[in-house]
Image (cartoon, rainbow, N blue to C red; front, top):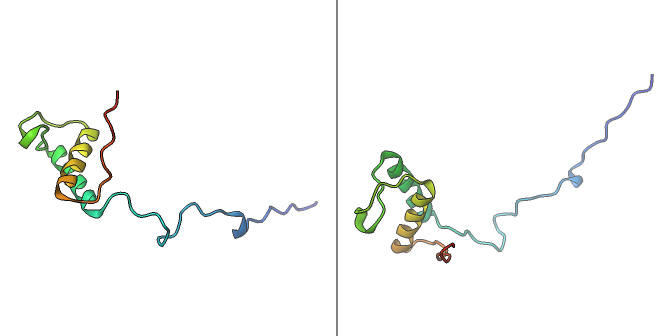
Length: 89
């Protein structure tokens, strides 16, 4: 009976998908923006997040809408957030 050897996997075959932290690309969103989104998601779950100026609109139920409101709030506070994209048709 002949025994078969399985092909050996070496580290040279693997490619690295993640770049090192000292790469040239910087973070797209700052930590403050992340905290604002976290807060907005909690408010949405509790039912206290509202749309419209000064919270006079209806309750926010959509996850996407909650994130949009949070990023808008973060921009007003001066957090590092990319500028808004144009309206989608």
